[in-house]
Image (cartoon, rainbow, N blue to C red):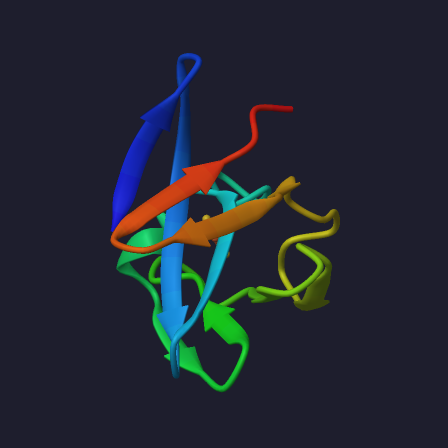
Length: 85
Ligand code: FES
C-alpha cells in the first residue's frame, strides 16, 4: 500500500508479517513501487522492471541506477509507525 508521510509517498510492504517501508517513487522515472510485484524482499518496478531490496532500499537491478529511501518501521499492535526522514 502507499501512504503519504510529510508530503512524501511511502510504499509499505508486508512480507510474511515483517513490514518494510521505502519511497514509493522509483529512481528511474518515478514508477510507483507500491504497485510492483514482490518476490521475497525484492520489489520490481511496474514500469520498466528495476528491482529494489525492501530491507535496505538498495537498487538490485536496472534500469534504475540509485537506491530509494528506506524508512524505519515499528509495529505496535494494529498500528504501524513509520519514521519520517
Ligand atoms: S520507472 Fe521504475 S524502472 Fe523505470
